Length: 148
View (cartoon, rainbow, N blue to C red):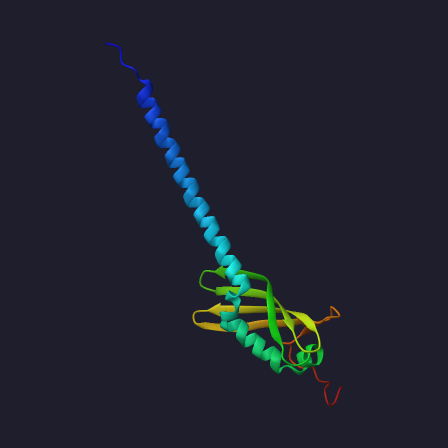
């Protein structure tokens, strides 16, 4: 009696093929989920970020922003976002959004730092339609009353 090893080897090949195919399917599902989440975040998800809402409220109250963009300032869309985290030091978020007011459009660059439940605005910079940059978080500089 002669044993034929070919059927057993074919069975192992199919198992390996289905194993690799399963891994490829799982990887494809994870990539698709990341793309869908990223698309949703860029389309609507950023509107729920409380730090960004707080920054927009400061921009709306800023006389500089109102003189450049006009009133009714609103976020049109997300241009970019970056997250970085350091263990023990919290995380830093950076957003660039396109703003539109009644008078003009511009870009808002916001940097936030979050540690625990507290989020602080690090910087808010408005780029106007003339590509001029205005630091809305800088304290107003006034000339001293008496100089030496």
